[in-house]
Length: 198
Image 1 (cartoon, one colour):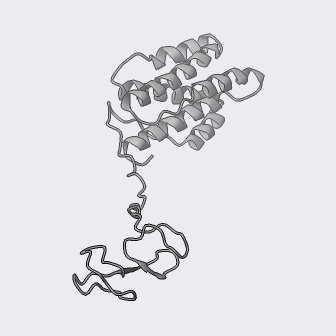
Image 2 (cartoon, rainbow, N blue to C red; image 1 turned 180 degrees about the vertical axis):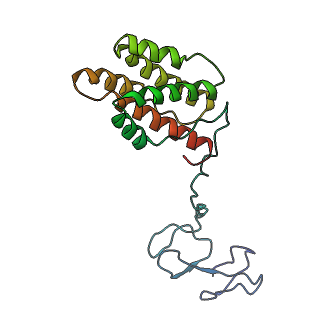
């Protein structure tokens, strides 16, 4: 005669509940749903494990919150339309490129509250060297933008190499304004991140 696994009192063969302690003597198999002796670790019918603690349901994955705006180091530069820069450069036979270069250098200086860059002198040297100095200028400005992004802990998009390559390519027919547009576009993205839009 079987006994109750809880109170050890004898029970009847087909009994589903112990008459002494009132506890269930059978349980449903988790796999085949047949009645099996209570507290069985393995179903005698389908051999599946029983009473194995089920893993806790995983919390639904939530996307990380969007990054907030960057902390402003200094005045945030003006977002300039690169298409408009290109149009003005074209209609002024390249002169507006000098203006846009000066504005980019001034924005970078103001934003990091330093005067490491001297856009006025850079433009003068660029003119005196027939444009050779601008190869360095665009590379330097892009490098300063990378330094600013690193210091502020924001995402860093390094455009130093594209600016350098595009400036060198102007000697084989690629317009030099393209590197300035790449730089201005990344500066626009940086200003947007300060407003929490990037």
